[in-house]
Image (cartoon, rainbow, N blue to C red; front, top):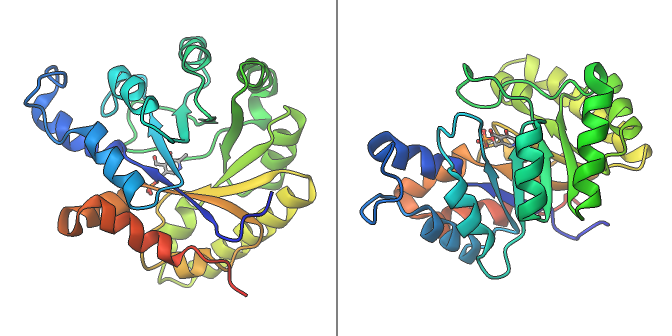
Length: 251
Ligand code: PXP
């Protein structure tokens, strides 16, 4: 399944973060802004191939009602990020988004910090993956670029991995960035050789994207913070279009 372009999944969580900063407890008010659904519509108009939302246990940004409304937008390919919990599996199986990305979750972190420890909880992730696949949902596992985690993703029957680019992004412009990029490169190769679809995300921006694009076998990048931040100057439609213009596979 190799598209000529790398697919762009736009994570719109931080539009909801901004709304919650003023309207926590009143997000359903007609005055609550920004309107996350309208923001999503504009992201799609800018060329987003998919929309990603993370429904966190503490509902700190995206709310259940946001997900339900966004899922109804015409032509949307929704990727729901969620923790491996029974409540979230039930939610996802009722919603049936195109894709679910299983992520680790701890209340203390500002955003998702590490990858999912699939190797350390094979049974739980296998059962979750099985339930979601049975509901017709494509399952992706958000993992660090580590060989044991990639093998574990295959072992639990997940068709897709999203490789965590956070360590690379944090090291960007430092010598360690090359090391992190090399780790990602061999993870991409390994995952591809094992038959997995390879996505990546976390901390990708308009600058480090040129290095990310040197990675092999990428199917989709999920990008949130940088695009939402840029949208404050340009509007989300243009911020998405600009990022999308970069996502061409190197010849
Ligand atoms: N992919 C996953 C699994 C994430 O959890 C996140 C952010 O929480 C992203 C991609 C997007 O990261 P960023 O907002 O840094 O672009």
